[in-house]
Amino acid sequence: MRLLLGLFLLIGATSQANSQQIGQPLPGWQPGQLDIHHINTGQGNATFAVLPDGTTLLIDAGSIDPIDWRTNKPRNLPIKPNNQRRAGEWIARYIRNVLSFQKSPAIDYAIITHFHDDHMGSPLHITSRSADGYVLTGITEVAEYIPIHTILDRGWPDYSYPRPFDGDSMVVNYRKFLRGQHQKNGLHVERFEAGRANQIVLLKQPNHYQNLFEVRNLAVNGEVWTGDGKPNRHLFPDLKSLAVNQYPNENMCSIALQIRYGPFDYFSGGDIPGILQFGEPAWHDVETPLAQMVGPVDVQLLNHHGYKDSENGALLASLQPRVFVIPAWATSHADQAVLERLFSEQLYTGQRDVFVTNLLDETKAAISNFLPRLRSTSGHVVIRVNPGGHTYRVLILDDNTESLAIKAIFGPYQAK
Ligand SMILES: [Zn+2]
Image (cartoon, rainbow, N blue to C red; front, top):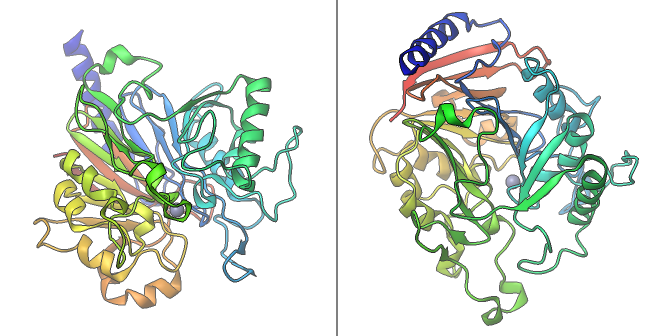
């Protein structure tokens, strides 16, 4: 049986490698493969993974407020592929497209890393509503077009850490959605718990991948995994010792996780910061404690879109990613100093490839000296890990249409 499975995996890997061609649509997912799609809508994060047995996982579904709250002016950021639909619907259509092999496509797990519009969708300035009355935006809009079975976030069930979200229109709308979907479609909601490796599991053929595949919950709300069986580390001080304006902010509370498949490792940390601004207490740096736990990985999704407070030296020296994916949508993504660290051979030696989903023109001018070193600056970034997790490729897909056409292929890379 094992021999047969091995043979099957080998054939799968070979035929896949041959069928990926520039200009052609991405060949469909095959059993045993791990596909991680970084979907570019120009509106925030949306990572969709098809796990080796076909279980599906969505991490974030951003749809930014069309009005910038700082300036009160329209952002005028084009939506990809075009402005005829909003990001949530585009994300759902992309997912349906890549799940065309399933009879009834569904998202088994959706994770909201934290409660910001570029990760969950803002209801402000949007008129479109569900039959239950909540605004369709980001994750709530995705669910209108494709069923979601389980949602994990950092706030369920009371949404009170570090303070209640009662006045937050985004979370209020989202909770209305959770109630509606639970009653109508049996949506299941859980709080993401740091340290667990059994909260996001393979649902279809777990026995085929025992000890080979795992999603490890690393951090949430300042709780950081410290190793098998050991209690979590509490990074943030007791709230009683802080004034309300000193409470941990939303980014610091982000969910971080690691996906392991054989030797292959992928890290995703939401918008956690790692670079302290002048006078900030040390606990504002969430990256360093994570760096101490997480060893080398193959692929890293940049924290906080590569904003200037992310990707500190301790994290890079520990993770040593071969491949970086930058989920960019604003001019501050990515920052010049962050790119300097990413490419620094002082932190770790060896090659690294950097892919950006949506580098804006203004940013291109600001980081022009790094432009030639970026492998791609626009398009969906797909990590396709071959059965067993030993090798993988990076495929860039055209984001101007829904064709899933391949623009460029990188690799194969050897997993570390
Ligand atoms: Zn963000």
